[in-house]
Image (cartoon, rainbow, N blue to C red; front, top):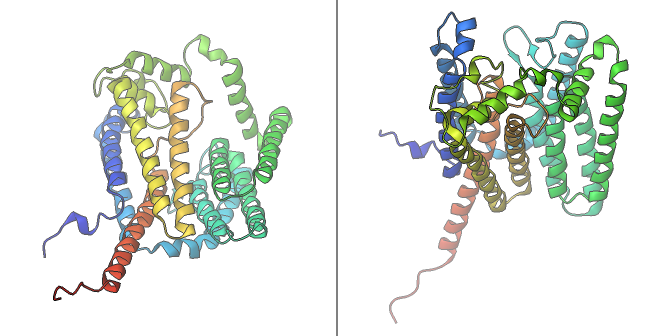
Length: 400
């Protein structure tokens, strides 16, 4: 039996090409940006993180193929409520471990269960988007249904974003903006959304004003305030040029239009997050603004293809699911790029499918897998309709 890639590589071919191009870039840039890290942690084995990245990318592609070829789209709607409850439980567990001093890392973002460690916020992002997509898909017939959908969606959004907020403000804000965008597209009246957004701004302002008075267990809130103040008023360490944001600006400046060439980054040798949060700056340094502009264009192509998939969807749940996941990934990419360029406060958002892999990349592959699953389902529905039309239309009688 002859193997043909077309039998398993299903869904939007353009998105597959985008993923392949981003993968090639990821392998190159992670290898060149982790040289110093490899010498510090792996005894000079510079190939260690290259192999690690290839393994995570390969695993991610495997997850996508499983979701596209085996998991039906309707299953996402069925498990969405259970997934949200599971996410809340994991977030509460991570919060409790942080408060009691047993967190998986210093910030409390990582949950270490012994046999596996991961960020529960990654589970929560996909779970909440699935759940809100399900709620909105069932509430498009009347204003009363829309209002009930709004209340349900906001209730779970406040719980999940509130739990994430403590350890990861940027992810909480990213998820909140994504859900608000979904609700707006789902025809929720803007007056309701405006009240929620206003309340959110008021809450952040209140936390900012009271951050200095928080007890030691809530000292993480002071970090959020510090980042906002450094963005508005400038970082005192910038006078010495030693902040991560300064290094990122230096990398972009040195890269110029055409870059210094693959593997010739100097900034990555002393930038702590060169392979993750500030990887876009290293891309500019090595490949220049021209290639960096093409990377941005790839994410815009992905966004456009997401819109196409939504327009072709024959059911509301898949349409809302793709809407939420596409916006989440595009927003995250724009945040990473904005931080590297210095137009946004420093956050901890990786560049989707490019930054050095971890469990976050595996959850990103789930998002891509869901999107491609809906695309493949659209194609099957179109083929079924064409077959029905063909059967229903009798052949013309050629004998008169």
